[in-house]
Image 1 (tube, rainbow, N blue to C red):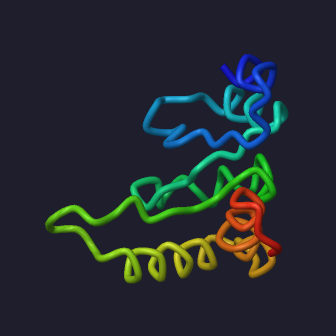
Image 2: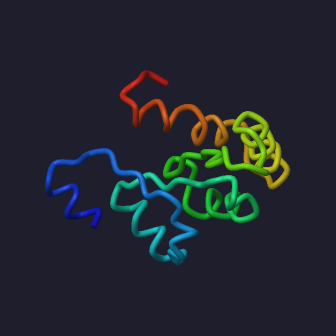
Image 3: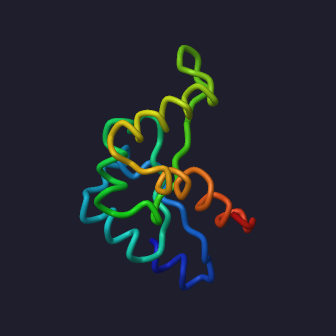
Length: 111
């Protein structure tokens, strides 16, 4: 779908929940090479660091995907998410990319 979207003139593509869609590592790498940004969510907490390390932080955004009853509120979830990423060896520069820079670029803002 990514090439079709690009052919239609779409320049900013986010693949939401690639892990929950059961995308393989090779598929995610292909999506990233095609210019898509992959979304890593709170539910993928244990897999996100590995995905970011292997594919590259420049290809990801993180989001809480929270708000459901019985789950953490967004702010607490994002804090937990970032602390977990740091504990898994993701650098502050990589965290800035996935949490600030890449989302700002997608929104057309200066990071």
